[in-house]
Length: 170
Image (cartoon, rainbow, N blue to C red; front, side, top):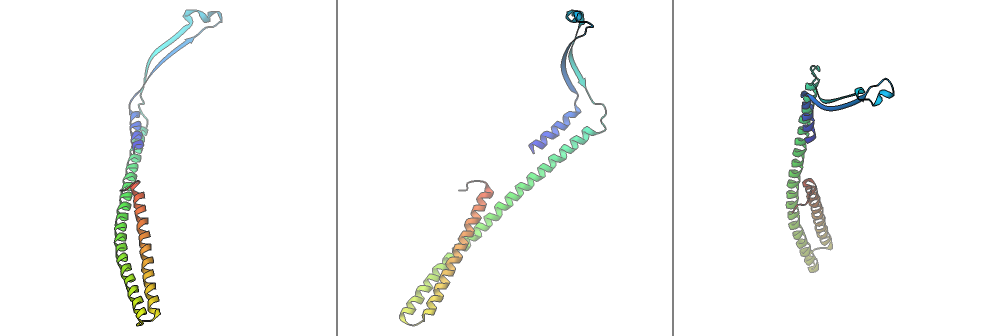
């Protein structure tokens, strides 16, 4: 945006006259012997002023084009900021939801291990078959796998959030 703004200012300077300061020195002689004599030395020093009287609207068009480029750069900047804020908000919500899911799965895992322990005690007492123990183990391991997957997604969402924030987040 700063570069586009500078281009607008540069285009607006075309409306002002151009002032130059120059110096000139020349020799004019018809022969080689006249080359060092003073009357053959010509010089000039002074400012010159130039202003374009009619350009067919080229300067106005250049300013309008530069202002359009500035507006386009501002719109692109606003869109980038809005997209970044949306990504941060989405990842904050996702991280919170995954944290809650991980907590629920942790509680579920504790209950699955408790159920496995009860089933093992029932098997040792002879009231259930070993098939019930295997089913309880399968359930406990499945819940643990789901909890680890949720934890992995939570860490990935937190990592993406840190990336979107472009730095360290404490």
